[in-house]
Image (cartoon, rainbow, N blue to C red; front, side, top):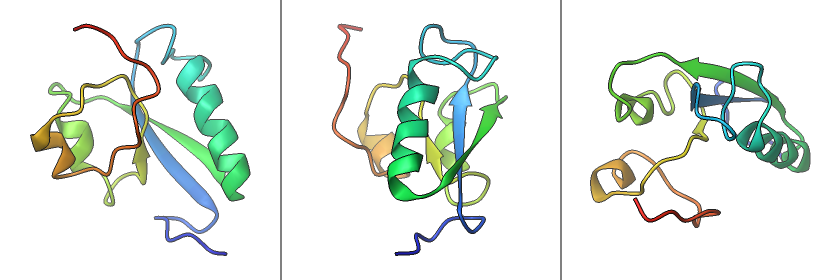
Length: 95
């Protein structure tokens, strides 16, 4: 099965750094490990892309243009869901 990604065989994944222990600049942390496992299961190579924008909501605007996926601690909102297909939450916080 071939998945439609921006680059064949590669899943470009944006994350907002730093947000330890989930996203850390050394490309380690919970989200990096989780996405690496997902990519392995899909037969893709993970390519991390640091999100450097000022407004975190802009990370979703890059989907399908600059990166294939986002993994970064976020609150699921109706506005964000217009730009992204969210998986079920894997952690919950009372923010």
